[in-house]
Length: 384
Image 1 (tube, rainbow, N blue to C red):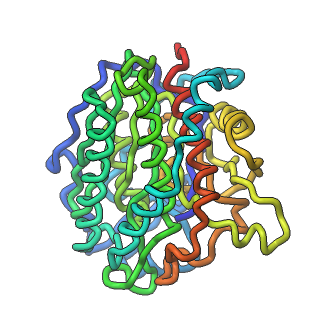
Image 2 (image 1 turned 90 degrees about the vertical axis):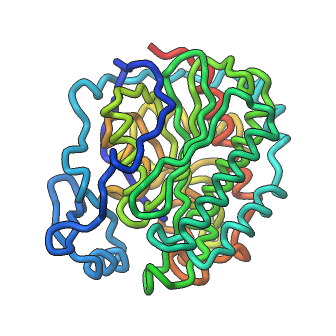
């Protein structure tokens, strides 16, 4: 879906050793229910409201974005997690990255998105939402195995609601971590539990975009053998549409564990250019500039200029508009790149019509180029 973060320009530098063990269900909220069946949502900084499920989805139908903080009310950036991260002044690994860009392939993206969007919906509480997550975990594990990445792992991050998030870890020389994320769930806002929601663009496109970036970056020997400076993680979040629930659970646990996340990039909706072209505008990628880390966002612009063949356009999307917001809430520098200027993004999201027929895979390749370039540059970067 469309989303945003919390304005924080800093991050946790004091980190303990990287823990690859993922939380068990008992470590998370046991249920999404609350007092009298209501949940607590945060629509803006300082604006919280108890609502029932019907009221929650009505707000979504009105275009409102929010955190569901029912079980994360104590999750906020601490002073210790607000140490600034300095990003490279320029891109520096073009000689290694440019040969990788030619390996990006629309074929696997089409195959994976065809299957992903064939589930009736990927709603986080539905049976098909759980099934789609299990299928995706299998694909991620096969990607690692096919690459011969013996040090890499892919594990579910277990949630109480049924659909698990997924974390693929490519260990580096240090526990300093770069996160690339997308959300795997989908929703039909007319009927969240049972409605048809192929979610091809929102966010099947981001899901397969980062999967393709993972496949290709593992063809680099240094990355495959864990010789990069920093650890790389690829995340596929559950329950973004329900109020950033999956990503909040993950980044809350990272904050509590003292994880040293240097950067987080969210890819949410990477597959539509219809609105842009219909408006007579130039095809571009949309770099979100509100509620994001300014330093990381500035570096992403340099990555787009270095490794994409289309330009970027600055745009805004508001508070809590996607999973990067959860990283920001934990005090980690986060950024968000979407398919276009926000006003030109797909209007088919959250309906039965968000189909693969309307997805532009050439545009998704541009997002994959940016994702691959950023992941490699920051994996090799020297951070304090």
